[in-house]
Length: 517
Image (cartoon, rainbow, N blue to C red; front, top):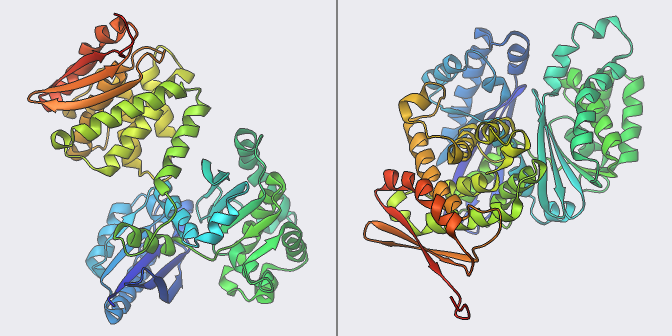
C-alpha cells in the first residue's frame, strides 16, 4: 500500500500553522503532526498597512523551521497559503520574495473567496456529520483576523455567502484606544458588530430559518470543545454558550483563558470573538453550535487530495458554486428560464468545439456562471446593462472562484453586449494576463453565439445540437415557430466566433414531423 505525505501551511493573521498528512492507498486522510506559532501579522497590516521587517524576519525563521520539518517527514508535496494579513499588506510582493529567497517556500496568496472555499472544504471533510447538519437551515460562520464569512445553507444547498470586515484582530485594533477608557467594552463591540450584522440580517435572513451554526475559528471552537466535551461531538446549545458569555462578563480574559485552558497570549482576542458569536446567535436565532475543529490547513489538504484523486469525495462543490450564481441571478431579478437555456446552448457549443478552443472543466464552469448572470445588470440599468453587469459581478463574491476567475466571468458577461476590447486596450485598465484575456475572448465567442440562438425572451427553441463540419459550426435548432428574429440577429452575434476560431456558425431549423409547413 503506497502512502503519500503532504504538508499544508497556513500563513494566517495571528498564527502560522503547519499540518502534516498521510494519504493511504485506501483513500484515507490522516493528520500526523500539527505545529503552530503565534505571530500577529495582521496587527501590522490592519494598523499600519505594512508588515514590519521584524515580523518578516520572524516569519521567515519559522517557515525555515517548517521546511526542515517537512524534510524530516519526506513530504511529497506541500502548499503554503497566505490570507488577509498577506493579501492586504502594501509590501506583499517584497514579503513573498523574502520568504522565497530565505526559506525556499512559495506562498500562494488566496483571494477571500478562495480562502473561505477551502475553509468550507475543511468542514465538508467531516463527511456524514456535515451532510446531516446542513439538512436544516445552517450558517457556516468563518472568523479570521481581518473579516468573517457567513455562508447560508438551505436544504443541503449553499444559497448565499457574504464577507464582512469584522475579523477579531481588526476589531481589536479599531477599539484599541477606547478599551482603557471605558468599562463598557462589550457594548462597544456589539455596536461595532451590529453596524454590519443587521444589514446582513435584512438582506439575507428575512425568510430563512437558521437552526445550526458551524463555527470555523481558533477561539470559540476551542471553547466549544471544552464546553461540549461530555457530548463528544463538539456541539453546544445556545443556552450553554450564553452561560459561558455570562462567565466572561465577570472575569478578565486572562482568567477565562486559564479556566478553559487557552494559551494566555490569545486572551486579548477571546472577548471580541465571544461577543461576535453572541450577536450572531441572537440575530439568527440558531439553537445549536457545532465546532468541527478544522482550519485552513485541513481545507488545503482536502483540496489537494480531491484534485489528485487520493480520497473519495461525496459532496459536489461545483454545485455549490453554481447555486451561489443562481441565487445571485435571482437577487438581481434575472430571467432564470432564459438564462438556463442560454447556459444549455453555450455548454452544447463548448462541448462540441473542444478541439477548437482547448479549454477544460474550469473554463466550462466559468461559462456556466456567465450564462446564469448574463442579464443581472438590468437590475441597475437597461441602457448600460453590460457595464452594470460587470460592476455587480466584480462587487459580489462567488465562493470558490479566485479574483481573476471572477474578473473573467464579469468580462464575458460584459462583452456579450458591449464592443469587445482587444488586449492592449483591455490590459491598460486591468491586471489580466494574456492567458486570461484569451480565455475571455474564447468564452465571449461561445456566449455570444449561444445568446444569438436564444435572442427572444420567449422560449421558441426546444433543443439545439451542434456539430463541426469543415469550417462551419452547424447549430441545428428544433422549433416550429418563426425564428426570423433569431436569424436576423444571429449573424452579427456569431461574427466574433468566426474571428476567434476561423469557423463560421450556421443556424439550421428543424421542425417537428407533425408541422405542416
